[in-house]
Length: 508
Ligand code: MLC
Image (cartoon, rainbow, N blue to C red; front, side, top):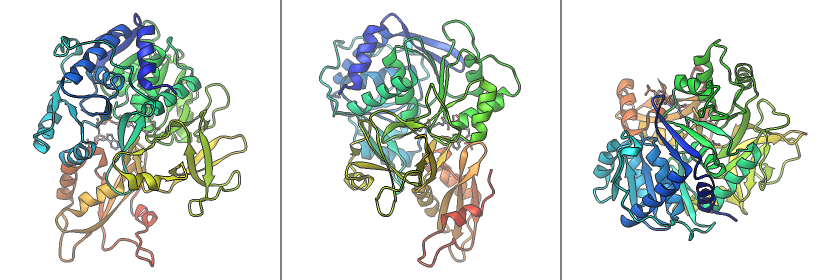
């Protein structure tokens, strides 16, 4: 089995004269970088990291805004066999405190805003502060570091990344993805989607999830594609770029979550822009409604490619590039993946065509969660990873997701643990208990909503509660709707009936 470090290193050398990355800040190109530059700079940075004491197997946290530096540093970490831990730079202090303590990183790469918070949390943390607002070509601090070849000693079973994902138990869990997991996943996607050196990828996803980092960036870099890297998602900037029909920045591939597509379509309106040069519009991280599949087909002139993946497993299913794409289906399994659909209570396979929990086994599946043996044991049954998703396969071998066993909310492609939000709400003055649910929403797919019960004789101040959530949780985890009720709906055993709680809210 290959390592991701070797696949990327080979490509950096093979395509050295080709454009690798054009970084766009607020819609304008800020810095451009060829594959040869990325090779040289990632070598230098790896040398710089080693000088700071980081070595193979050490965790390096990334708590920075999306930037070219972040990409070069990510490639450096992979090539030297360190373990990158990319974090959402918008996490609030309590969220960061938990993650810093859990990841036990030897080095933290932080932007100015994050640096202050991290220092407050852990004055001992070794921080490399990098202002991601400064254009990459102005950063010179690592240029005198020893270069040399940083990889060579990475093995497929070495951890390559730890990516945190929301757990049902409340606290995020770090899914360990090995060098081999990442290599197999990238190779699979490249083969399924025919990603090539001739491709130009328009990239407006965050770099702290497998979607933007592994499915999009890794596959492009390994193939020698040109990546148009936007600092953030702005529908206007993205549309302007995607509709460029000529020149080096003429995109051929776009990947996004459904909420991004619906905002792009709203911003596009009835304008007759030409997108015929784009060969693939991929959608994942949340279900794409059949209605949006049809809207996209009309607006872009091609059917989107809906696919499914998970942090713990990489990409699992995709509608075919050539062949029938079924609206509402996540497509067919990628090579190397074994699938079972089992009854979640008995663990026995259900008859073909029936609904059950999807279990997976394959070379991209995580060996487990970082420092969480109990969670790892619970996630696997005899080597099969329990996805927590219910689904079925049709007579043509296409898979459909039908429901979720776990109470996870997916809002705009972000997974949110109701338990984490409930524990923040419950810590607010006057709150007796709460139940947090996902309610269908036009903009976000699902929105976070909270039913709150006050303590006897107490009056919960909803405005104050909202501010309390914003202090403790990243903005998108905060409920968009609160209601105060006398008691939560429960069954005879005292279990909260989440479906009844959902009915208390109006879809957005
Ligand atoms: C932003 N907001 C959200 C939100 N993102 N609310 C709910 N859900 C979200 N996901 C809110 C903010 O809190 C803010 O509200 C307002 O929207 C505007 O904020 P913003 O920061 O300007 O939003 P924007 O930058 O436009 O972000 C929207 C988005 C982003 C859709 C671009 O959420 C995003 O990048 N989502 C993609 C996540 C992703 O990559 N997931 C992949 C997971 S990997 P207020 O009140 O503060 O004004 C995975 C595996 C797989 O799932 O298979 O892919």
